[in-house]
Image (cartoon, rainbow, N blue to C red; front, side):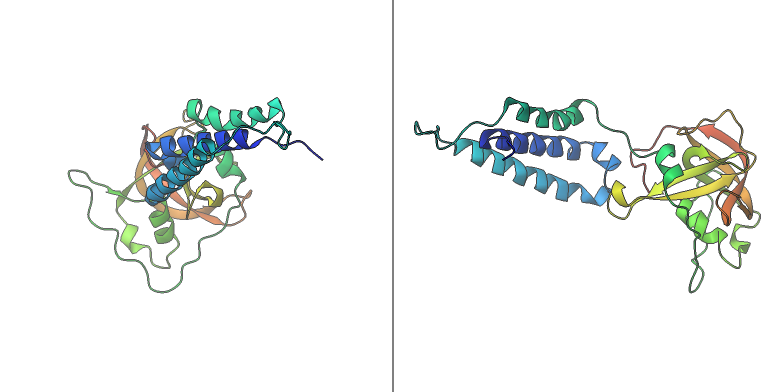
Length: 237
């Protein structure tokens, strides 16, 4: 029979897991894993796990002399290492490497077109849009709402085999495990911008372009200017 950690080790692992969950949920780090609205659930889950661990540790009794319970192997404590590491070195949000490996699927538009893209941002000559909104508008049979308009898009740079690069954002329904990639081609994008750099692009609508590596048309933007920006606290759309 394979050896397994003893009860004390198991409860300590639960204790660490509860602490890590509460620490991550108590800061913006949780946004690297789940959507913003999931913070209350993480806090509750962390508190429950922590409570179970504390109750288990306080309820432990010394092993009887008859030897009914044997301590698990010391190597069992190594199971705590991955949990503890998250407190010190948190893994980053998914980026260009992950986006490049997610399957690309065309956006299909059904039903009536979405409402207009709205007025320009206050004090500017452009309208900020999410990559999802721009993708949906680009796929409409009637793209007149984007004609003669400047838009501002924010995302990170990811490679494009057909030239230039993609402005990319990952979209999650629940958590990073179900992420899908939203890509807007910047066909004439400058090589000075490297993968994973966050940038904002201000430009005009141009017809979707086909990347032979993908095989179908993808939204594109005619960039007027591009500049580096800090990654937002909530990197997923």
